[in-house]
Image (cartoon, rainbow, N blue to C red; front, side, top):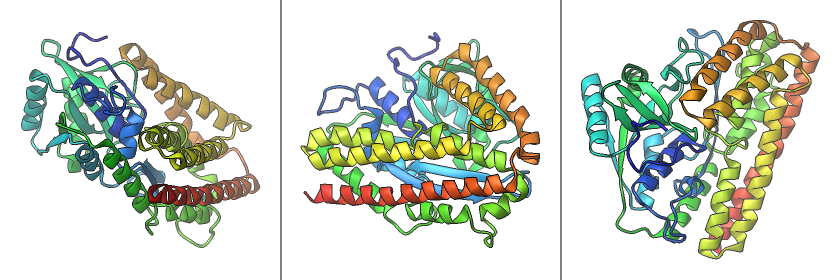
Length: 404
């Protein structure tokens, strides 16, 4: 372990960056789950924060040479500060946000926090971190969240707690660039302070109610109706956002399918679009609230998670040599990220470069004909439609559980 890590900061990594960072910081602060006397699990915090989302957005930017598909499986995916704030409020944790457009002030705030023994949660562009950069020329698209948990002033390097089980070392200049890359973040930094008391049953119920209201809304970008829209777009030949139009002739379909696979399996997910983690929350909550109905809902979400995994595996069909090769590289890279530590950095970067080397030719000429592609779209549509039906049923189960 790096000697720069704050003494007592001894738990690293997790599944989803917004909740893994908070879970590890609360553990460092000595905050315990009052029902168990142990540190909060990431799953419990995820559920209290509001749980799940269902975001699907397809963007097409002229300055980029391929479409971008955005997925979001977290509650309030489009409002991360709101999500974190309400999570902290529900368990009585003080969330102290710092934002500034100035590089010097942002750096000083971070240094002051670590000097005071406080780990700092940071919003940034992950591609610019030395241990990650798969395609550093293609940045500014997506956010990521890590914790700076130590600093070595002599070497000017930070210890970074990402989703790996060991910290990474990042040079100060790289961290500064990553924090500044997306202007809307304003070098956002979050410090946490422990609560005086926690009303856990109330926090759980508020989290479940938030999940019901968010997923149950009419939004076609951030709630369950999104899935119905996505399913329709897979075979819609008239809509400009329909997949037969966007990926006509198979152009850039490789990148589109990779986005589906990584969005469900990797990139802050658990291989099930976070449905398994939410099921873990419900299982814990069933014991605390004495609610068998929540156990039943947990089982339904695990079944839904398995359906999401099938969709991911369908997108990178192992019977197609190119897709199987991409899947293998991406899975090995994700395993290295989850292992964490500086000894994995070269592996992560190397596998990222290996994958990116596949992309140009694969996007230019997909290795299957139109009939195969249309069949794939139809199968994906059927799978997403099935997922949608089960997601709606699971939400009804949660409503009934709260009414008991």
